[in-house]
Image 1 (cartoon, rainbow, N blue to C red):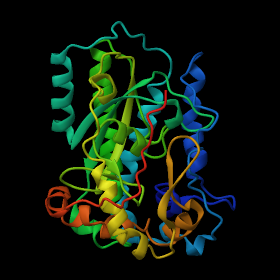
Image 2: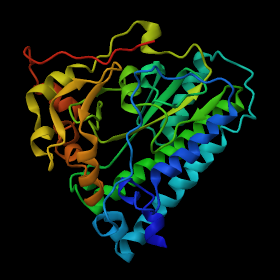
Image 3: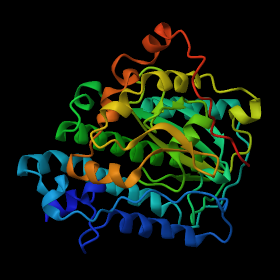
Length: 344
């Protein structure tokens, strides 16, 4: 029974053969949207949320074959994560009625201080473009607070491994706890606040984080940010605060987009992907975003190998750090220029 519960943690725990399904669990959580008569809906071109479930038999699923020691180590991460996700879902019960929609600079400063004290690495703000909302989903409000948490370098660099998966689980647990804490604080001050799901979600988190100016999406599809590079996990809080200090409102460009010029020259993640699931060059997706990874190929290897993470581990930004890479990079005038457009 413990192994089945642990199997819910990640893609590797889902099974299309009648076993537990993480996709099914996320769909049940998404039913909280039924409490809303109006939602901000995606564009017709929006992509669906990438599925977690797999056709692989249980004997090939790493999370279904944990040792007892591994199970005991994962439980303190997995159980709080799932409890936190359930708590987030309950905040969509439709009962809360906001009394404010504009925040003072003082409140924003308090919110940011609380986020960092709770373990957030960075925090930003965005007016969510409809093409960042997954197909057939919706969000309560069009503004979002986006924050990141850092994962430790040592276990990440062992990928693919149980140690790496455990560290990723720890990151997701922190995302859930921080989002609930911040949402509670916002509600206490009269603002609408709906935490995103730490796993899954209703929107494309790296897309939102890039639009919020927290970093840039690399060729592996992960956000690359100052300090920790790609060793990040991302979550959101949807809110009715209309005067958030977004880059869009300020007309400020994202200073991190040079990262993709480096990626076009590096391509270490492309070369080292064990199953060649990363495209040589990102491809337009049709919804304003970019398709970077062949999801089915990635998912099966991910499922069999503790959530993989090789692309994260080998990324120079994860290993050397953002600032060192930036200091040595002299530019790449031949890099293909692509941008994720902030569509309305």
